[in-house]
Figure 1: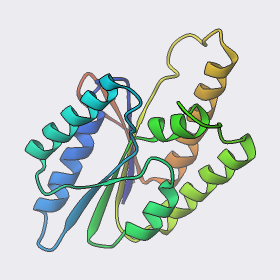
Figure 2 (figure 1 turned 90 degrees about the vertical axis):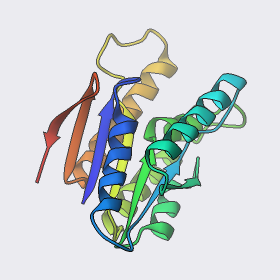
Figure 3 (figure 1 turned 90 degrees about the horizontal axis):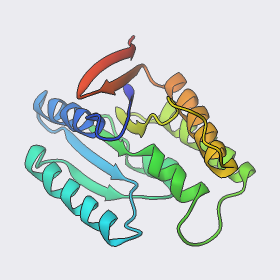
Length: 184
C-alpha cells in the first residue's frame, strides 16, 4: 500500500512516516525499511539540519537504512522496491526544488520535469513493495508575488495531485495530528 503524507513545516510528517516504517518492521520477520533521502546540504545550516534528522531517525527507528537520492527518484523506486521492503521517500518538496530551483547548475526544463513526474508516478504504480512519500503542503496561504515562486507552488500542487491519485492513502499532518484524507 502506498501513502502520501503531507503537512507544513514541523507538522510531524517525517515522524509519522518513520512510525509507519517502525510499524512495518515490527509486523513481521525479514522485513526491511529504507529511507530514500532527497535532501542536499547547500549550506551549513542545511548540513546541520540533515545531521540532526539523521541522528534523531537513528534513535527512533534504528533499523531504517538510508539511501541518498536527490535526483533519480523514479529509478531508485524501480531498483529498490521489494515486497518485504518499505520505502520512505522524504521528501518530494526537496526533490522538486533540486530539479526546478537548483542551488547550482541549470533548472530542468518544463518538459523534462513533466517526464520525471510521470516516471515517478509510473514507478510508484509498478513498485512491488509499500512506499510512503512525504511532502510539504505549502499552498494554503496567499499566492506569492514572484513568478518563480508561483510556478514552484503550482508544480508542487500538481505533483501532489498526481501522486495522491496513485496512492491508496493520503494523510495530512496538522500540529502532529494525523488527519486522514484518503483511505481505501
